[in-house]
Image 1 (cartoon, rainbow, N blue to C red):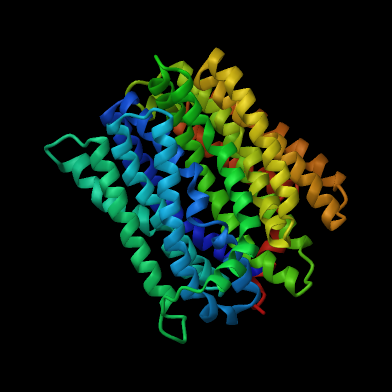
Image 2 (image 1 turned 120 degrees about the horizontal axis):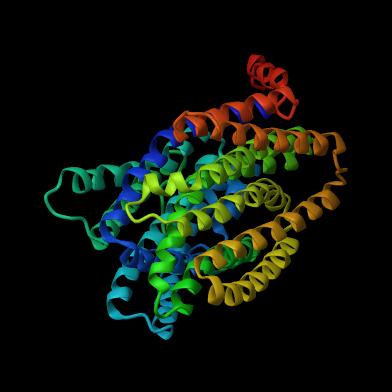
Length: 481
């Protein structure tokens, strides 16, 4: 399974490193530069708002189905049509809750109009995730990887002509329309591929008994996703609502830093998407997961720590390079958000293991604590420091959640702390801090310094045996079981 994880991770990273960074920096970033901080800030707040109730369009069905199909593939035909109809009803509930809450919060008609399309996008996304959960649950990881980038590929095709070759300036409305078309097309393509693995025709039948049986098992997953979405996405909404005079601009600044966090966090989602069916299958078969957990955790640690340290040394140069209206303040917000990725990386690994193992009650308690800390800290710090305060809150909340989840995993699986690895990791962090500092003293352009810092980080990880290169190469020479 370690070999399968590495092969598919490399394939996933290869296609995602081509498509998604181009979308983030060649499309999404250019849209913000075109429309300005205020317009993009409102879009970003509404975009994050659309995530808050997203779980009601799914109620944990994707996570439940992915785990269930990975362990019992014969259930695909039994539940596919029923879940499809159930998700249609949940989509209606999602629209009602989201629009009703937005109206209560006092959003204007222009904002509600934009939100309507963003809500459609979320419904398309949940259907796509359901179709992909069947595909990955059946261990077709490469097909799932292709579907994971299809929406961004279609958005690039739709936006590039307007951004780089059109005579008319793109508006935030144009951007959202193209998103909706891309997400809708991806949903149809995903359904077509998922349908190929069914042995019988899709027949939509209303079956309350089966609905209740599915929801009884999926709702615990839904609570995990809902609570996670609340503590991860509420920052931008609170920024825009708590600062009536400068909220949209502060949210735009926060979005500028969050864009880079979102870009690197794509790797985190790739890890989680690969690991959930793998952990589920191994736990079902009672196969030891120690090696896979250690390997994935070490790779994530090297990626998150090396990237965040390099960004800290070059934050001002990065925002000046990316944004037409950059500032030192933007670079400070970026530094805080990127430092938070270290905790997010841990959550992607251990949280996925806990989900696969069914430790949902403990995770829900953790996320309730995370939400409480996030809301209270945001309420205090946003009023004082705006986007900087929201970014600091991200570090505090994510770090707390990561530490508690690590403690739960240690207890659930009776793991012991690897003191040798702690020493190696400490020496590694000190080494790459020193090397990044020395690189800033060189006459090289900052872009080359950034790349050189990444190369040095990988070499240091290999030298200190954080990345056991002999084991990795050995896995590729081993025939898959």
